[in-house]
Image 1: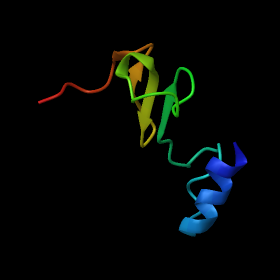
Image 2: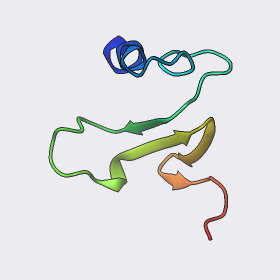
Image 3: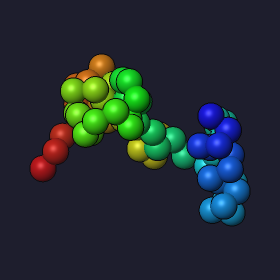
Length: 67
């Protein structure tokens, strides 16, 4: 987990990513299984969040209305 968060933030030289804290940005994808096993499959996406807003939960769109 550290390699994917703190080290990436260090490379970007920013303090509002790479940690779980109030005021930090929250962009993430929770994916069932190993992402390196086969092609990307939307049915394996559990949740997606961007800028602190949850867009997908339990594999279903819950974000703002799409145009």
